[in-house]
Image (cartoon, rainbow, N blue to C red; front, side, top):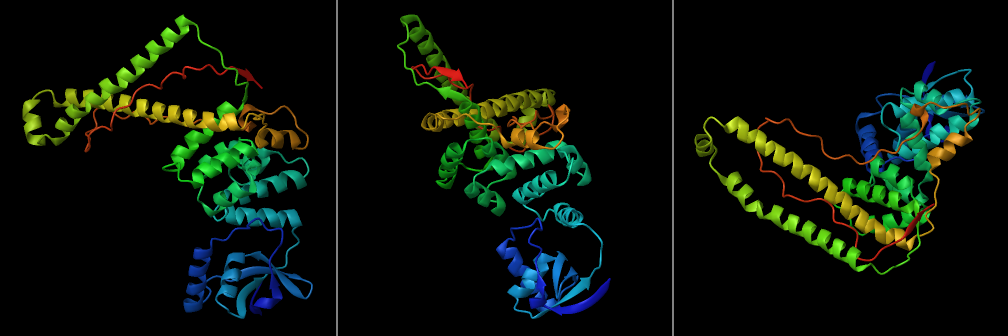
Length: 367
């Protein structure tokens, strides 16, 4: 290896390298740093005719151009690696430093599976220190529309939400994106729940057959509705008691509960756990209620996830183990807290089990 300085215009990027997205602000910060302090680590290049191709360090090369510098320090390497070996090396360099976006990872894994004979997800996973499930979920992201991919690349939409959205039809993805862009979700967690609910509903073909309920069915539904709403009202009435307890002086509280503080704290912990789970369930109910409207606008919801497509497209598809099958994770409720851990805040506002379906029946047939 030789360390030297080369003109910027004699160096070009590797068009097949895995990274495509470079965060503009971070790149500008690097350019400012290089302009002030110089390049701490030379980039690595290899000869390509009368010019040089970047092996590692494209981000530093881009920052030099941004800083309007004419020369860059390089290490010229002479290797006998194949194109695929160089590509894998570049992937390894970036993926283990979290420099690649989830979409770039997905495209890199897809290229290896497509171009390396006999490669399977479990082999790619082992090579880069990942699980087969990780690789398959990344591959599923390739089913995202271009517009959604852009938001995932920029970090505006998190990977967990992206995995759920990737299982939707293009029409449903567009509907989710429109809702997201309109500020319908307080955070990524709400987007995860919504996309998961819509994914469940899109697997059904909604016939929109409205039938009149029998008197008995109407009466039963009304009872359920009344009971559910009454339960919510009763739970909310405990809010005053919780607020009173939250405002109490801790020293006076200790005296009032002398000999029973631990027992009463465990009691409150059980209440808090139940509230957290009920609130989680209500969030899912809200996601399903919102998703129902989009599902009705997109009745052609038959869909096969890219993860399944990717699995079928792999060379030599022997009988796979369950670990290699992509399972898109279901949003999980909050973990149960330890019974006797002191709390600094009062439990969250209580919620209740999810309400029943509306008065009109929507007949559905599995697709």
